[in-house]
Image (tube, rainbow, N blue to C red):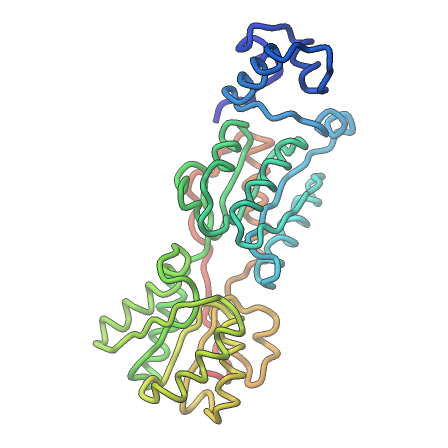
Length: 332
């Protein structure tokens, strides 16, 4: 990445003095409208972002790292944010965290505000459907930035990406279900064509093909509600399906409740495996079998890569994906 554009770069591009640019940034009424527009055009062209808090932060010998998370309502992503923040704190950095709530507009606002307040680096779990302007702003700012768990749908290869070995996890789950006698398997939850959903079902699809078994895709919200409704539908309309892998543990926990209402005994009549191993998976009844993704270790690892880049210039490149592990409990 090139260096972050400065006020001097803007002044040269606009053909004005540095003090004139400063007056524009301060909204001074002494600047003529034509000059103000010229400076603002130069700022946009250069990708300059006004750093409100950078001087104070650097004066206190502190650093600020932005964390933009797609869904902090999901305990998996909450733990990601907390583990990354704690790793940054141990290295002497402050973190500002924002929840995009799967909304591209909110994500763009968060990224823009963080850049304006002088973040030195950014860790982002992108939401679905982002337009890419926020990633372009990060690239123009020239700060170290990493995508985690998901890629930007428009700028996926522009900044480094770290994730977990979801393919291996779903393959482990599929092989176990086949060995346990499953004859028809469903993959439940998650949007049909997003990268993370494709990865989380890819290993399972591979196993189904190898063993010539039907695989049913029941795409939808990654939520308890969707899992609950889908379990009732499976029990009522698809009795031949005898096993499922859920997109995440929230969907699977909803399915546990739906099957309980329908009188379906999990672990024998129907086998169910989740994804992530959030704390609730260990406390559900019956306890949920799941693919464990150690998000606490992952958050610390990616924060460390980001800071090594920021402090030492060590670009993370394309790191290996973190391994995952199948954890068998009562539901499978």
